[in-house]
Image 1 (tube, helix red, strand yellow):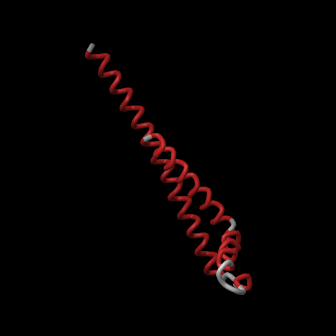
Image 2 (cartoon, helix red, strand yellow):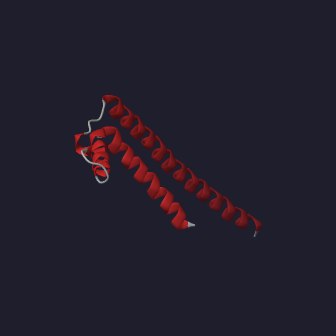
Image 3 (cartoon, one colour):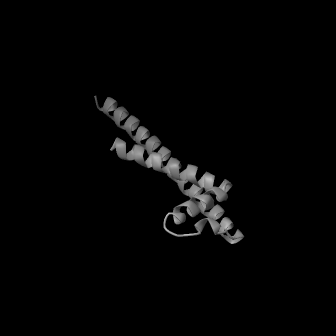
Length: 97
């Protein structure tokens, strides 16, 4: 179960990081897309991104930041709830003895 939690934490952090890069530097995403398209198509390097596409990339980046940040916050909330329930469980056993 710990590996799954660490994987979700890592995934959320990666989405957050990718969102920051996409929101701040959309041209890097454009270059990557051109490179990927260029593997299968001719003259892909001549493609030019329209301003609307750049705005859409920034919006996607902001959404990724929100999703990654929410994932990290929820993981922290689950950990603190688990710690509280563990403390409550140990205190309850002390009272019964």
